[in-house]
Length: 270
Ligand SMILES: [Fe+2]
Image 1 (cartoon, rainbow, N blue to C red):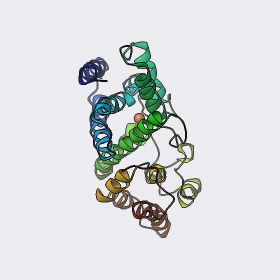
Image 2: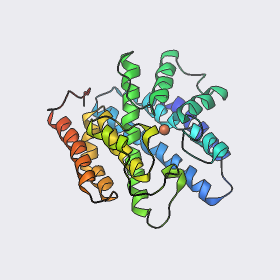
Image 3: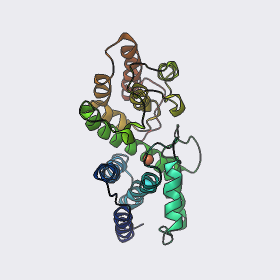
């Protein structure tokens, strides 16, 4: 894919976002958050691709995957007024449906199109794909890491503001109760990502984001999580209890171990 094709995709994306403009300001602010997220994921994936040493010629494809990964969010919000997939539809599927319905990808080279579709389809699954076509796997893993890095940015801003104004569209409507669900705690202590269906409280949702560290694919991402202090940020918005401390010990141990190379090998070239 070249820069011209990427430019055409960006023009289509902007028109699509505009055509889903929301009448009420709060709704539009939620959609604007998604548009900004998309631009930031494009930046994150570009930085990651460069660290991994991908050839310059692969950058437009990586950017296109980021550009389109959440394009279904506009339909999702317009139709259901939520970003919760459990309460509506899988937004990765919605993204692919929009792209297919509007024939957006019709000019793409066949193999590149299949890489892009694969990366989008996998971006919000509980685990990264483990085996398959190496180019597809690489792009899927890059998109997952880039997406998570930017969601950490989004929630850092959001949780700091939470005291002032809560937003069900960001929190998926979970109640702000002190409890942490036992299944959520168990997932993290077993060093696996938290399952969406186990989330019952806002604290669980925050720990769901902590659990992402168990499915990070690249050293660059672990290093960014550490340098940007995302785990400290998440811990600071959770109760100051022994239980929370133990949970974060497990997460930090994993990140430190991956960076030091003492855990199971990260599937990483970076
Ligand atoms: Fe997404």
